[in-house]
Amino acid sequence: MKKTNKYVIPILIFMILLLVGAYAIFNEVLFIGGTAGTTGDFEIQFLSATTTNIVGSNPTAVISADKKTLTIAVDDLSHPGAGAQIDVVVKNIGNIPAVLKTVDINGVDDPDIIVELIGVNVDTPLDANEEYSFSIKVYWDPESIVGDKDIVFSVELEYEQNTSTGY
Amino acid sequence: MRRKKRQKSTFIFLIIGIYIVILGTGVALFSENLNIWGTASSNQYICSDQLNVIPTLIDPVNNRYIGGGLPPRTIVENETLNENELTIVYRGLHKNSPANTVTSIYFEINNKHLYSMIDGEAMVTYSSQNNNLYNVEPILEFVNVGISKKTRVTIKFMTRLNNLKDEVNARVKITYTVNDCAKNFYFNIILLPLV
Image (cartoon, rainbow over all chains, first blue to last red; front, top):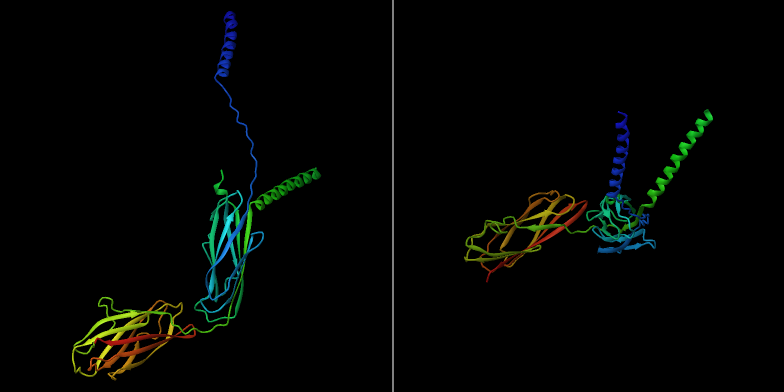
């Protein structure tokens, strides 16, 4: 009995060594080295604003120096139905995809002078280097019989990083 | 013991505070607002007198504006509607047409305004070469016409087209009030004898 034990232990050790050796022969580790950094640039700007469809008015559309503010004036609407359309182009000049999150419109509740946003849709994505066009229509309601009005309005477009396009 | 507990709470709040600040900074980095500022102003209102309607043919199957009651043996050669002017060319095949023949010309106008047209009235002035036209009567089907609705306009007249050369010019003035503003539509009818 003692003789058997004497051989069993060395055999087991030998088998373990063999197994380890075999594993070592057929095992290889590949290393991939790399670096990752965040160089994100999130920037949306007004690219252009053009006045079109001008009827009985003298509209102006001016983009600020930092290209973050657009100032529109549609003054001296001469008669009901007079107005103008401003075609606006916004561009994502950064390298992060954006999405139009909210549109906040104020001062457009006058029944006689109508301000319409055409083609402005929340959740519209704006990928890096892409452009987005929409229009603003300002006109004196053709059926209005109330003149001598002044209105002030504002539109705030909030863009956020588009997380739905990430990994 | 109590002091230690307080220190621990302060530490947790501090960590949460730092986390919120980091989160806020992160959101601020990837969010941007574009602003549009606008002004608009209108001049004093002057009521425009143009009624926004489009005249159309009532009976496109028979393709006719002029209705029944034509003097006997009178044939309509053609009718042309050019914007608000209807020209009817006719041919009379008789020399002594009976008097008191009632003839009607029909057309429709539809309300293109964003308001109802109310208190409708129609008037007609006319001239006839040999005074062969009389009892000219314009009739509006509806005094009030809703948005996008139509109304029939009938011009009835009596005629003796007995010399076959009568040219008739009629001017129909249709007036409706739209949003407190009286507006007019003028429709011209020309009856031309075919020589």
